[in-house]
Amino acid sequence: MTNAKVLVIGLDGATWHLLDPWIKKGYLSTLKEIIQIGCRGDLYTTIPPLTPVAWASFATGSKPNKHKILGFTTDKNTIVHLGLIKIPKIWNILDL
Image (cartoon, rainbow, N blue to C red; front, side):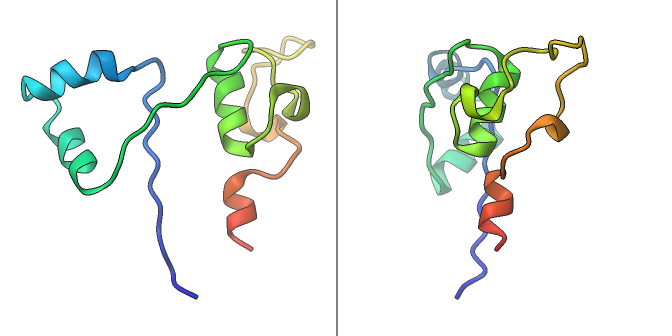
């Protein structure tokens, strides 16, 4: 077994329609280098299309109805945080 490493860079709210022209103009040289030696792709958003919902889905590989993160706050007005996700996250699964 190898000790392969993976780096995921998530730019919340950024699209390639925004980033590509900036990369072409030389504004994002480090991102350009990372893309050249790695890869890039699009992710489809969640429903509802909110940051905490999408990141929880990314972290777990699950839909919102399974990880139960549905907005920026809980039904008790607690701000959502990683500790509220009660199902395994991808980094826990891969660390086995």
